[in-house]
Length: 55
Image (tube, rainbow, N blue to C red; front, side):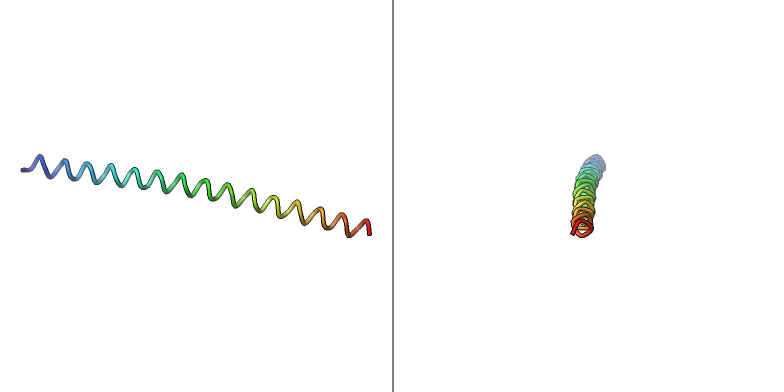
C-alpha cells in the first residue's frame, strides 16, 4: 500500500507544478498586456499634448 501513497503524492506534486506553471504563464501574459496598454496610453497622451501645442 505504501507504493500507492507515493504515486498519489507524485501526482499531486505534478498537478501543483502544472498549476504553478500555468499561473506563471497567465501572469506573464497579463503583465505584457498591461505594459502594452500603458505604452499606448502614454503615446496617446503625447499625441494630445502635441495637438494642444499646435492649437
